[in-house]
Length: 150
Image (cartoon, rainbow, N blue to C red):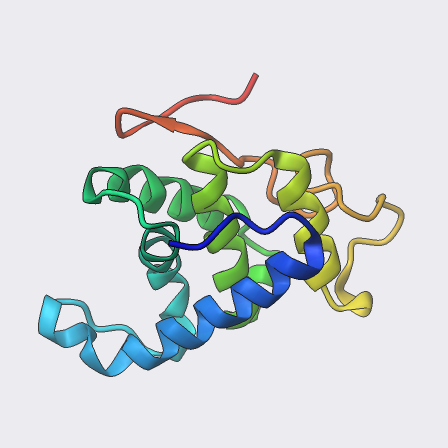
């Protein structure tokens, strides 16, 4: 079990370790009935998040739902076109959906990860939920259901 990172730099370091963990697991995914390739590595982000946080299996569905809901909502954005950014977004969204991090933390870390040329111009850095990135749908989940943002 790892302690939650406290800074964007710490999050980026952990996301890198989580990505490496997921990449190493790719060859074994068919054994559990999943066919995942490098571009699909974001599917493993919530599973690695559960593993790194040492959370019980009962939290897995909420983490997966939060990650995939956020991924779908980010259609047309840089995270959808870059496997590493997609993984990072899903990894952070899993934590957000479980109530472990704030939307501001997700905004800050994703802003730091976004290549400068791919940031949405004219928008404040770190504004995922306020229009900086197209993902305006970060959602917490409760009992396996997606709750609308208020």
